[in-house]
Length: 190
Image (cartoon, rainbow, N blue to C red; front, side, top):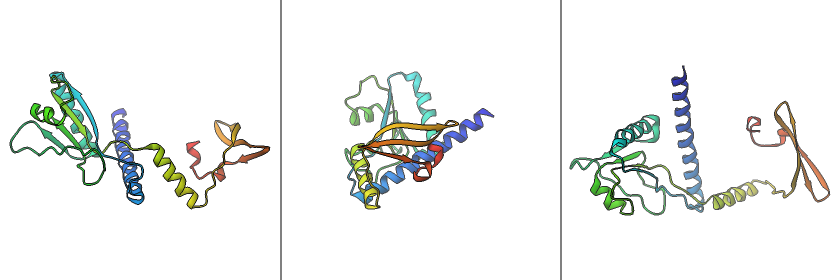
């Protein structure tokens, strides 16, 4: 059944996302956050009141799939407190999703948005980081483990039955041939 396959694929993607973020946060701890990961989150906004039920369903679905708890901020006095995201860092931040329907809350924390905005979804376990700094950190770690960086021009790729079998490189006058068994990646990624 298609919907069952789609549901399994979505579960798998949320699991992959969560594990990927876990790994990035582990590396941030190890490196002193050299690549400046943060958890500012992603913000989705609508000025269309007819979209509010859609926003609610999307937030509920994300929570059900494992993205974390849903907190609804609709201006109720006994409702959960909204915790704004700091500009830097990733530790001690809420996970999950904030659905913000309270106009005062929207204006207070997001004054740069149009006054017409009626609802926000704030996905919390997301943000950004310096890809260049992460790449340099990973390269340094690889070199510590004995990996050598080789600068060369790719001259050709040998493919047999749709699979990469070899990569021919040129390094000055030297031709190098790498076979899949020498690569540390699973062959299915080729």
